[in-house]
Amino acid sequence: QSALTQPRSVSGSPGQSVTISCTGTSSDVGGYNLVSWYQQHPGKAPKLMFYDVNKRPSGVPDHFSGSKSGNTASLTISGLQAEDEADYYCCSYAGSFTWVFGGGTKVTVL
Amino acid sequence: EVQLLESGGDLVQPGGSLRLSCAASGFTFSFYAMTWVRQAPGKGLEWVSSVTNSGDDTYYADSVKGRFTISRDNSKNTLYLQVNSLRAEDTAVYSCAKEGIGYSFDYWGQGTLVTVSS
Image (tube, rainbow over all chains, first blue to last red; front, side, top):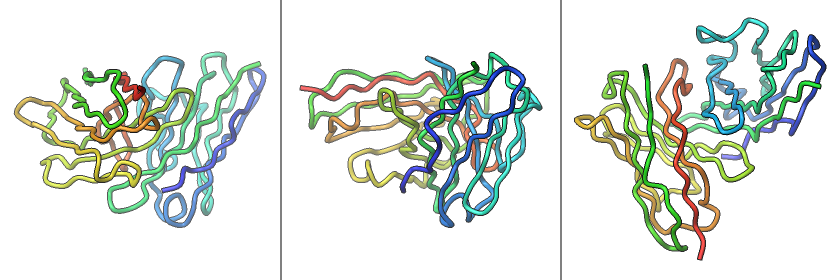
């Protein structure tokens, strides 16, 4: 149950694109198309941004996208906006009703 | 509107115990699995424990197995986490989360703070 690996921080100017990687193993990210992403603003509860790798719940803006290749999932924010500044966490189902989260990535809008 | 409201967090000495609660509303509680996730100060999210909708099956992270017990009372729409033999490294905000599509967590509470210190 080792945490998934995410970069500690990424940054970009408004309008630019940033991508957050989330690397696991064949026992979690690579083994299931069950990666979810969460956005967390300071002092707030996490908000579900993606499930099943790339499916957006209603209300999530479409300038966010999710993908996966092998043991690495990615979250891309295209057309970065000020309100996108937050912490982002990936999470993967790891079998037998267990989950593993990433360490989190702080997105800064310059 | 789905609401999850945790309570029960406190300052406790190493080796102590607490019972955390999560009161749910706005959805049919008995239909969904529920999960506890914790976040240590300045750290990332950590999955702690999950329970199936009936309460018959429970699952734990290795870091808490044997010390924490998850349970639920569907008649009271409430999720519980009994935390025993607490250690300094258990200091965190404990949040409950509702099962979502694709093994995700679609609603979260704000959390309750557990501080383990002498």
